[in-house]
Length: 474
Image (cartoon, rainbow, N blue to C red):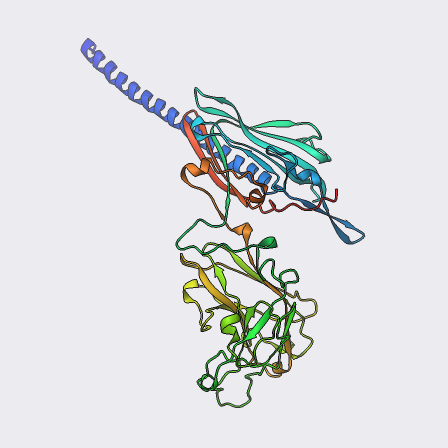
């Protein structure tokens, strides 16, 4: 007898298969949707990364002013006047910042436009011309809140290139589906924190010592004040008594320290009192410093106000030692510069700035340039003098001398900036050329909305060459 499926069984089988197909089909559809979303997210993220790289490559050279040419082994620097822009209501104002930012209100959901000039170089690093580049969000569609990010370029002077021709404009679509493109310049100086102090007068390149406008600023003259202890201090072995001589005592471009006593001894008996030279930085004066043992360093050393968050540096030069100071041994002999309190000469622990170890040049070909960079800790400004400490332990070094040239202290403007927050981010846009030339970075905030999958880009781009105006030679 033949057996088969009954109608009921067939219907049950069909229902089961239908359920399986439905579940499998839904899983396939979900997987496809997930795959599409993932691809859109990856594409948007890749676009953001690519755009970030292009922006950094462009903006990193914003406002470069000079180029070098080697002729018969002689380096000559040239400045092309076309890199300077005339923006704002008065075209007679030459803007050395070399950029113009056109802001759009955030509530309009559109974007900003940045136009700037930079110098261009060929593959060999030779200067070829000045380019004007513009980044802007175009063709903004209100219905889907997206637009097209465009980069345009033209060569103002010199030789044009394929992507940046002479006296013509080439526009390239960088990305579509861009919903936000906002650019904000940095604000000079760190964000305000804690207590504040009176503003410091800045000289050329941020020099704060010698004080800009003082009689010693133009030639970078300074003086060094010796710190001496009394007999009780010497007997107790305190390390701040002065041993040696300073010339000239009233200051100058170069200060020579000599006649220092070495702590070297062939005796096995430990030295109880160390011979230490301690010298405090001060401005020049019409009258010489007091005699050795005076308290001039307490009242006349230059007291700096270092703000937390700001970056400072000191610079000076050391002559090559043509005397026995060449026997100076790093790690054994001490030559350092550090922060000290004005009235008692103690270290400032809260600043958390260690002394800088300094080594004299060991050969005629060694650099004489000495440089250090620091920033104080905490939330309140730190008041401090700067002092050299020299202690010699190698034999015969006491028969040598050290010459310190053109000591000065700077506030590093290129590394000191912050960005506004909140609503201020979308409104800050300095238009004064004197303020714009202090802009050292830009914050880029961009959003790509690709089929409802968003990729957000937030990046800081440094523009170290956005400096002051120079005299054009070309």
